[in-house]
Amino acid sequence: MNFIEEIIEKDIANGKNDSKVHTRFPPEPNGYLHIGHAKSICLNFGIAKKYGGLCNLRFDDTNPVKEDVEYVDSIKEDINWLGFQWAEEHYASDYFDQLYEWAERLITEGLAYVDDQSQEEISKGRGVPTQPGTESPFRNRSVEENLDLFRRMKNGEFPDGSKVLRAKTGMTSPNMHMRDPIMYRILHSEHHRTGNKWCIYPMYDYAHGQSDSIEGITHSICTLEFEVHRPLYDWFCEALRIHHPQQIEFARLNLSYTIMSKRKLLQLVKDHYVMGWDDPRMPTICGLRRRGYTPQSVRNFAETVGIAKRDNVIDVSLLEFCAREDLNKVATRTMAVLDPVKLVIDNFPDDKVEMLNAVNNPENPEAGTREVPFTKELWIERADFRENADKKFYRLTPGGEVRLKYAYIVKCVSVDKDENGEITAIHVTYDPETKSGMPASNRKVKATIHWVSVNYANIAEVRLFDRLFAVPAPDEVEEGKTFLDNLNPNSLTVQQAYIEKSLTLANVEKHYQFERLGYFCVDKDSTAEKLVFNKTVSLKQ
Ligand code: ATP
Ligand code: MG
Image 1 (spheres, rainbow, N blue to C red):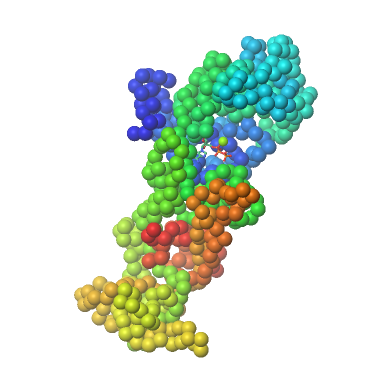
Image 2: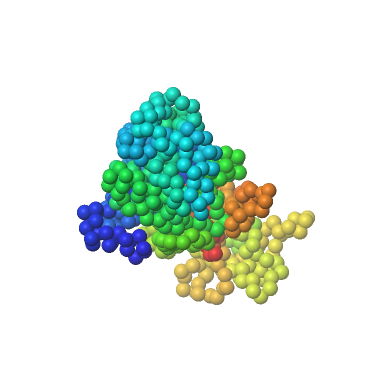
């Protein structure tokens, strides 16, 4: 049980909120969700599920300039893909009328005022934490004047930046967020939902807690940077005498070799450093999906990481471990050769096609078996043969033996080379008595290698990925450099591969294990003529 669950269980035991649990996930629709959001989603939806409660999806759409419906749609798709259903779908912008009415109430009660100072003057007036700030010269306007000015702000009489509405919390708190914080700013900007109805927009601090309150949220879970905002969250709920949810903070997820700021991820997309938000190297949920991660593997990762009270950095290899662990259970096995060299079985009949039985998934008997054609000429990996090998090399060598998976033991008899000395074919003989599963087949060979029949192979494109960033902390940069300088120039390699013909029917996002090579999935760029595969992760770390 983590510390958040401890708080919740205590509240349930004490009958707080009638012992109900209602959480929310509150993304700002200004970008695609990433693995950090996945952590927050698993936490909020997971808690609601565990305690028989509800979790809302609320779009925190109070900044019209950066927000877009494209992001709203992608966020919903990603949450569903992760396997969660929200109880209610809300938008902070749906509460603009209510928030406005409450703002007038605070003005009437002498708890808010219109300030004509510039942004700079306001910041300067706040001063430094160790000394009280300076009060605004507009702080003591009458209620009537404030109401009149605020209504005229709403009616569009003033230009952007000319006035703000501030809460009267005082100018002495050592917490700078509590020095007469701004509640509303003027922004003559069209909103993706409310259109041109509003030209004043509430600030995060004035919108968030009240939105939680309106929805009857009981536990408002957020990341640590909001800890210093909590006194203000509480102040507004108290001043307005409305339902008061409890804000609880936890440490945000940070991953090595990864950037999680939406602004920076957007820059990677806009400036074409990646193929898009769903580039398989991106830490976005849609990127992980395209890369071949399963929803289960992402949920397992969130669970394994746990909930912390202090910021820390999780090794990205833990995420890869979670992918591997789940894919081992669900991925269909198949054979593919990424760096081919021809293997010719000299004593195998020229036109013979022997159908061999291959297991689709040893972890899941229900996945069944398939037939794989075995012929005289096969593709094998170039790295599985070595002409001058030492004793530690167990695969094919001149005069040596190896087992071909699901098939026979073969012995290398000669190699063909071109004028440059490059190997063009490896000749072997096979022993018909050594077929997999036959009694005589327990003859000892040190290695089993995979293969694909030359006559029955399709060509595919395979995309191999390395980390997008070359350094563990891409955000840490020397003076004059940016996170872009930490990009790994070799994060994408494209290869042609031979794959089993059975893969022609593969669906996009279907998961495969290319035997001995790693986990792969079918990319959306695939066509009927040519499949494209993304490497999700290697078989071992
Ligand atoms: P930005 O990158 O623009 O600062 P953000 O990460 O704060 O945005 P929001 O859309 O405001 O993104 O986040 C929605 C919710 O997801 C918030 O409750 C936020 O605390 C949580 N969240 C965001 N990033 C992480 C993270 N790395 N780990 C855990 N939770 C996160
Ligand atoms: Mg945010």
